[in-house]
Each structure stands twice: as structure tokens, then as C-alpha cells.
Length: 431
Ligand SMILES: [Ca+2]
Ligand SMILES: [Ca+2]
Ligand SMILES: [Ca+2]
Ligand SMILES: [Ca+2]
Image 1 (cartoon, rainbow, N blue to C red):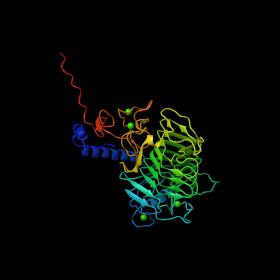
Image 2: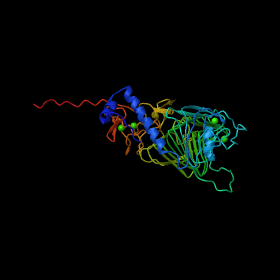
Image 3: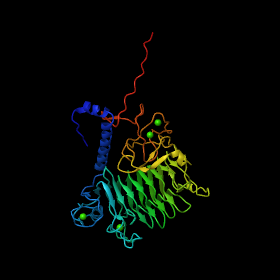
Image 4: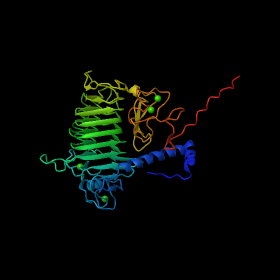
């Protein structure tokens, strides 16, 4: 993407070197441009459609408005089943409008996910697609009518026929207030490969079983980056995430989730792969187990409590570079889930948090809010081998010279908020 700014490089520099409102606007502009670029990179495949959802209602009606439910049905069917929405072949791109989409079509019976065609209750994703929330924020509120997304390539439900493999990307979304007997918000079923980025999954309930927020079944794969899983509840295990398949977490914050049973409140891993890096799993339940099962740490993680209420070790994890285990909520200092900038709510890292500057960005350029990562505070020691990235979904910004979390030069242009230049030391004239 090429953006032309009249006046050339000098003008750009002047613009970016101004402080206050203009700088904040430009940081926002850069965030939006990077989101647009990310969307372009995730664009539809050949023959696929870009389906623009034009309303926040939850309806199935040929009324001139394309709803998310109609868009997903068209994507699943590779056909314009609902004429208000575009349709294509293959991996379609669904763009959502700003605002809150609240479910209003319950399942029948209401307590079970009996309907698998996206006509009622949860949104059943049965083919490869990408869903992108609006830069100004899009929320999908399940209204406790069902879980939110059920990603299941087994279209005919017949175990004797082969299940195709599908790939699904979900970005820049708040997914909240789902409710189901098992897996409250997002279920990833076998042969589905899913990425979730810059999302918050919150306040969802598994009322009869496990996985209040996200459930990954054996044979399914989820890679989640720069995302928050908060305030979800399961009757039994794993209030935040239950993994029986392949899970990869990087720069996620999993907190404030609860389970009733004396097992993990945050993350339970009993699948073949559970790779965790740069991630906070802490503050789940009140002084209860944050994790259980077999976790592979790839470094720079913060995990609260590895043991159950009786002190039994229920998590098998070997500490590697930069790991901090047994960390208390008082040390992590997470703010409440709130509007801290960007399209989704996040848990701010409060001053003094042991997560600040203790991660490694691995080339990732933004946090969940699309703000700069890493933001290396010179006064705070980095982790061994780290680069000043913060652990979890949130990167503390700042602009106190000589921190490098201010503006930077990219291809000759300065982007970000520039600090005032530190005053050079004046050496007195030698005598
Ligand atoms: Ca419609
Ligand atoms: Ca459904
Ligand atoms: Ca940092
Ligand atoms: Ca530092």
C-alpha cells in the first residue's frame, strides 16, 4: 500500500514531530493504516468474495441489509442464499461494521446447540473464511442464547465420509456473552485450523461442562495472538480455554476466568500441542489453579498458580527463558477489562507490573490495541534475550526520553509519537 502525503518527507517529519493532538491523531491513523494493510494481506482467495456486512441486526430477511448471519450462510454455501450479501467460491472475506451485533434468534431447544446451519443461535462456520471487525470496534454479543462461533468443517455430520480441512481467521472482534452446555464462546472442531488475533473473548459460560470461553477439540488447531480471554466461567474445568487439540498462544492475557471444579480456572491442556509464549495466565479464580495438564513453554510466560486448592501440582510445564511462575496478582497488576484504545477492551498493565519489558516481540509490531510493540522502557530491565516487549496482550506505551517507545523511522519516515529531544549535555569550555 502506498500512502501519498502532500509536501514530501520534510512535511511528514514536521507533522509527526508535532506533539499532542496531532501526534495522537497520527498514531491512530497509523494504527488504522496498519489494520487496513493487515486486512488487505488477509484478503479473499481467488474466486472468493469480499462480503461487507451492512447492518448490526441479527436477522434473516431480504430487506436490503446484509447481516453477519446471512454473510456466513453465503460463505458456507458458496452461493447467494441471502441476496443482500455478496457470495463467492472459496475463502471469503467478511468485513463487519462498527457497533454491537446482538444475537436475537435462539436455538430450539434453547439449551443445546442443535442447529448447525447458522439459521439459529450460534454462527456455524463450515468453510474457510476470514472475519474482520471494524477498526472502531465490533462486538458480537451472544445475549446468552447460544455460544458465538462453532467452527466445524464436518458439514454432513456423517463420520463415514471424509471431513474437509478448513482455515478460518478471526480478527479485531469482541466476542462476549455466549452461553452453552459445553464451550461458551468459540468451539474449534476437528480439521479446522483457526487463527484469532486482536480479539477479546469475555463473559461467556459453559453451564453444564468445560471451557467457558474457548474449546479446541482433538484434531483442531487454534493459534491465538494478541488477544484477551477474560471473565468466562465453566461449571467444571477450564473457565478460560480447554485444549484437547493443538493450541499456540503468543502475547495473550488469560485472566478473571473461573471454573467451579477444583481444577484449572484459566487454561487446561490435554491435547497433543499446547505451546505458550509471551502469555499471562494468572488471576483466574481467587487463589485457585490457573492452569492444568501439559503445557510447553516457549519462554517469557507469566503463570500464576500451577496447583489445585489442595496444593497438588496439576500442571506439567518446564520453565524456559524468561518464564515467571507462581506470580501473584499483586505482582502482575492487571487493570480491569476496559477501553484502553483500539477496537477491543484490554487489561492494562499498571505501573510496577512484572510483565512490563519482560517478553520478546519476535518481530511482532503491535499489541492487541494495534499500538507499538515492543515499547522498551530504558528504566526497566529487559528479560534475558528479550527486547522490551511486555508479556500479554497489552503493551505499555510511553514517551519519556530516552525510551524508544516514541517515534521511529520506517523507510525514511517517522511514525508514532515523537518525544521531545533530550537536551544534550553542555560541556563547559575546557580551561
Ligand atoms: Ca438481509
Ligand atoms: Ca447455529
Ligand atoms: Ca515494554
Ligand atoms: Ca527496558
